[in-house]
Image 1 (spheres, helix red, strand yellow):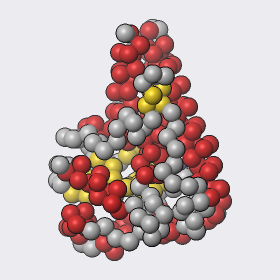
Image 2 (cartoon, protein in one colour):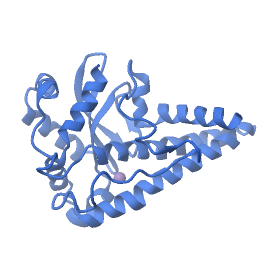
Image 3 (cartoon, helix red, strand yellow):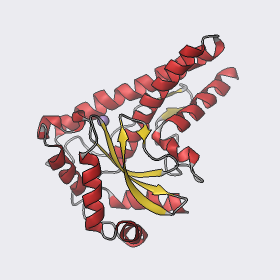
Image 4 (cartoon, protein in one colour):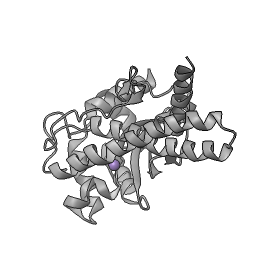
Length: 245
Ligand code: MN3
C-alpha cells in the first residue's frame, strides 16, 4: 500500500517537474500522454522504454539510422533508467531526515523524467516523409498557426530560429498557451527548464548534439530544416485538439 502511495507521489512530482507538467500548471494537463504512452508498467512499478513507432531507418535521409538507434536505444533508455532510479531513491529519501537528498533526487527526477516525456513526444511527433511526415498542417491547427504567427512560413521561421539559438543542449517547442488561447514557439534548456510555464507541449525538436551530430556535425540549422520534412502533423493536430477540447 505504501509503495503505491509513494509511486503516485513520485509520479505527481514528475508531472510537475517534467515538460508534461509544465502542463500541470495549466488549466488542462497534457491530455494526450497516457501512462501507457510513457511505458508505465504497473506490475513492475517502473517505466519501460516504449519502442519506436517506426523502423530506425524510416526517417532517412532526414535523420539517419545510426543516430536513431543510438538516440532511442542508448540516450532515451538512459533517461528511463535515471527516472526509475530517481523514483526509487526519492522513496528512500522521503523516509530519511536528510532534505538535501530529496532536493538531489527531485532534480534527477526532473531531468530524467523530463527527458523521458520529451523523447516520447519527439518520436511520436515524427513520421516517415511522404507517409504521414512533412507537408503542412490543415484544419483548426493550420488556422491557429495562421492566427498566432501570421502564416505557416512565419511559424517555420520562428521555430527554426528558436531551435537554432538554443545555447548548448535543449529543445525547440511549439506549445499551446491556454490563457491567451495562442500558440507560442519557445526554447527549453536541457530537458526541463522552460521559459514559459503553464503551456501544453505540441511539437518538439531535440537539438542536443546526440540528435544530429553523426549526420550533420555542427550544422544544426540543416538538421532542423530536415526535421520539418518528418513532422507528423496529424499527430500534432490530435494533441492540439486534446489541448483545446
Ligand atoms: Mn535526445
